[in-house]
Length: 180
Image (cartoon, rainbow, N blue to C red; front, side, top):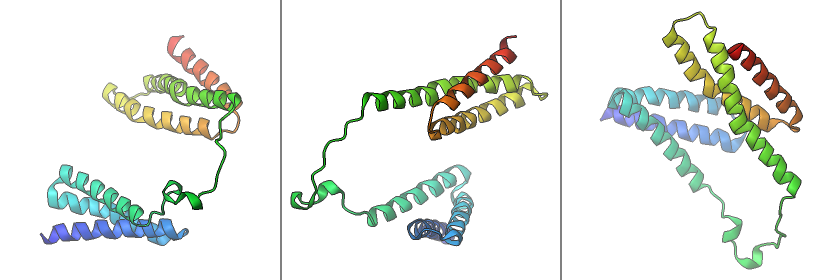
């Protein structure tokens, strides 16, 4: 019971410190201490409830505590204000070029980058000098990381010319490695 209370107090302290650092901007020490406590509470929960259930409890309790703090300090939405206090605003409709640009960003950052990073990962993993299970493990772990990083980079670009050129280059390079 005492270990359970220690784990719970570590989770509460971690959530409080991280939320405080988020609300106060620039409190690096509080954020660092909060994350250290959060990871420490995962070990503490694993000690109390076992590794599988303890890790789940550590994550779930931490997330629920942070959401409770967010809900507690939530400001009312604009729609919940009385009509006399709301300002009238025109409906904003995107232009056709904006819709096309966002459709191209989606197509380039999700399906195209997924296929390209799959080819690049397979091309890299095939030439690794390790055993087959180790190469498969590297491919399984590297693929989603590369896909996420490449998609995030594509979405962060102001213009789509550079990502399109790099995508064609990666596609050509990986195709040469795999199929020739």
